[in-house]
Length: 123
Image 1 (cartoon, rainbow, N blue to C red):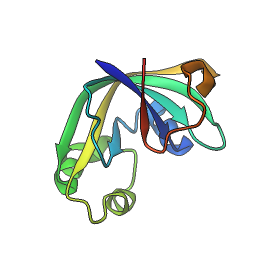
Image 2 (cartoon, one colour):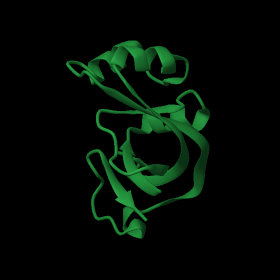
Image 3 (cartoon, rainbow, N blue to C red):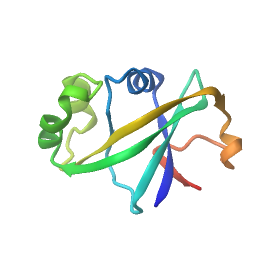
């Protein structure tokens, strides 16, 4: 199993921590099996702020994924539809055991110089 570090907007990070967002949406699925997502909060935070276990990976059409995940999407339908505009496939990582770090970490502590556009595998 592998871990990935994902760049996430601070608003969505907050929703993950407060429990209103239990799914992280992506346009492409990782090729490796993922055990854990390390959460990097983008500007203005720019720190690694927590982690979550990947309980399940859902893969289907955007409409079907929305129907399965909308109650804990943490986003509005309009945002979701714009994100998956012209896409035939949607990926949703179901998050569990979310942990917010008491002290946020620098990317350098993971051997990473710049935040990934999508994700990066880490040890």
